[in-house]
Image 1: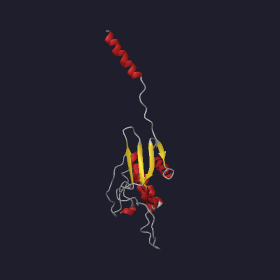
Image 2: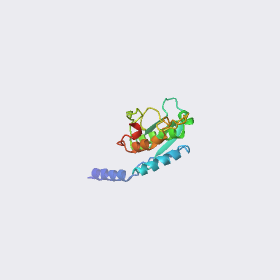
Image 3: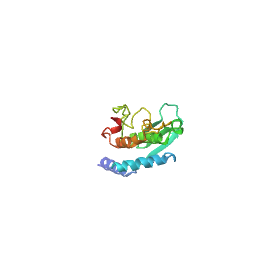
Image 4: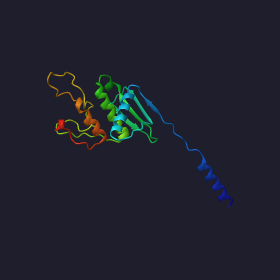
Amino acid sequence: MQKTILLLLLLISLSCSKKETIPTVYEIDPKLQPFLATFVAEAKKHNIEIVPENLRMKFERESREVCGHFASDKNGQREIVINLACWENAPNQNREALVFHELGHCFLNRLHRDDLLPNKAPSSIMSTEGNGHYEPCIYPIEGDNSCNKTMRRDYYVTELFNPKTPVPDWAK
């Protein structure tokens, strides 16, 4: 009887003890903050609520050949690392596409998608083939707008939040 009471008291005291709280981190490089804010706003337009908590977004000069990567741990802490070498000379549209790609992994659980549209353009911003899906022309040729892909942004952002987005007219 005495052992039972001791065991019961031990169980009660253990169940009442404070659980270890794991600190969360929220550190966003100031250069990446506007892209995160735009992503959250775009998600809202698509009726998806994004709460950017437990998130670290930073730059590193990485030796790997990828421009960015996302990782998370068992405690729910998320980290996006952008390769500074990819970032430095990229047009703003490519920067946005890169950050949106990584945020797609982070908040939308999107995997890579390397299929192509009928015109051979990537079908998704989640493609592993570069991040210039809606970049401007570097050397625009007068009267020829074929290399200017900025009007493709709406499709790629919509597809990011809805993978069942129909093929756009420009891709047929």
